[in-house]
Image (cartoon, rainbow, N blue to C red; front, side, top):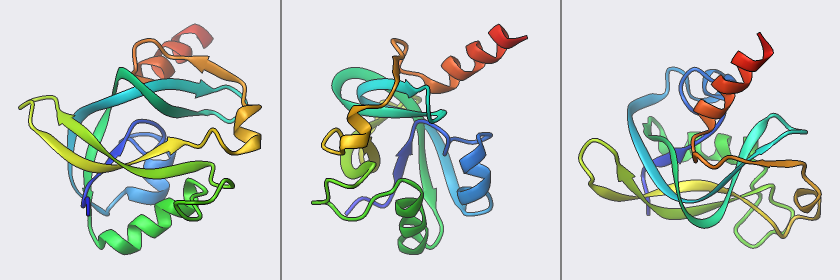
Length: 144
């Protein structure tokens, strides 16, 4: 079982869901990447990662009271169980690479569930950089 979580969106440090769900509960944060394909959900205001071979950048986190806090994150991500087509995101185990060392570890990742009918209708914007933080910062600059 993985004991770490790779986050690539609103659960990263300094974003709204980090403050609501993780602040004060994180033991360590490390810059990392995994493989996938990244989109911004324009009608929802957060990202979605699907299967792919592109680098997706984010943070590898260790949290206190792992099982309790993982259940809380499951609620945020609308994850019911591994077989449910109603999941907004599926919780999967993926290989994650730590940027500083190149070390590869297994971690939980919330991946957008394309079997969910509502998700198939989502208004998506492809993020070619694989970096949602950079994408959001560029959007803020455009708004100024």
